[in-house]
Image 1 (cartoon, rainbow, N blue to C red):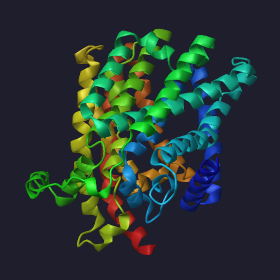
Image 2 (image 1 turned 30 degrees about the vertical axis):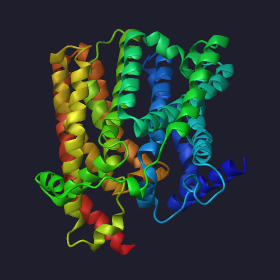
Image 3 (image 1 turned 180 degrees about the vertical axis):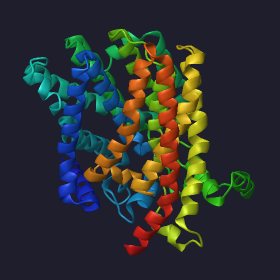
Length: 464
């Protein structure tokens, strides 16, 4: 318990030093306001409460998967992001405790920490429905427990996948294939072993099943994971660098080498977008089943995958130390152009591939518009993320004012596009025109933001 307490204190101090105590402590209030407003608006538009709750569970699971990607980052990348600091989770060589114990306590710390600062505010956002009589007070505690367990499941599943991958990549491929097959062939059975089943059908059986799966992944993750060390880093030869250099510049080549040589390699890009694709497919299916709407799968998937490329931006900047570029004989504009090229090389094939997977369930002709929307939205996301966060996007989450601006920027594009997707059944031509037009304008905004990002952050770094 002493190690857990110290890790919680370490996490709190890290965030308050990065963002300032007042800005950091505003974050839960901001999440509550956003959750309450979004839930109220969805309820006002007639969206079924069950669909709203299912969407929240999906987003929380996705967030848990992202937090669990500690296993895909490693100690060296953490040092590049945070500077020359030593976190307790990496101190197994200097403390008389095992690495597995520290990693297990670290995961427990994350679950407790995010339950307080992120998950509890989301659940509090349901209180307006309680006041309106649409949600029982007795359901709030169960909802909080199930959502916290869903976050823990996502975190544990992500680390377990990373652990299997560090030992045998074929085993990881087989495990992922088996899980995907189970979800496709027996979706009800797959949901029955998740914490969502505990909320939807609170019985002893669902409690035992969901608890067994949750405990299994939380134990398996720390047990299986083998972190990379400096001695195990792969070295890229000169020929490989020259091949990548043909993309246009050395910064793009360097970024692609960094991603490919890091734990998880380029597969973590596919993993991140794949999770969002799965959540989007589930939500689209639920909306179609619960309403009389006939949404456009192309616009919906193109929008969600494009917005999801913010994770790809995280990966292409994961080992960057912004100040190191001040030593190079080049302006930061060139660095961001290189990052953009690497971003497009990584994200475009993956997103296009998932649109192809969607053709197994939806008409291929309907998905063609997604091939237009996806790259245009992605370009906007890159520009917005780079302009607001520079080379440190991981610092965005708990910086409340910047997070609010970033969320508003994504919503400004994402909400109209998703509305156009939902309205497709009644006005297909108008919805298509609006979606393509908005995406094109957003892409132009993204290009402008990219062109100004270098000078913006060059000035900030030199002033600091």
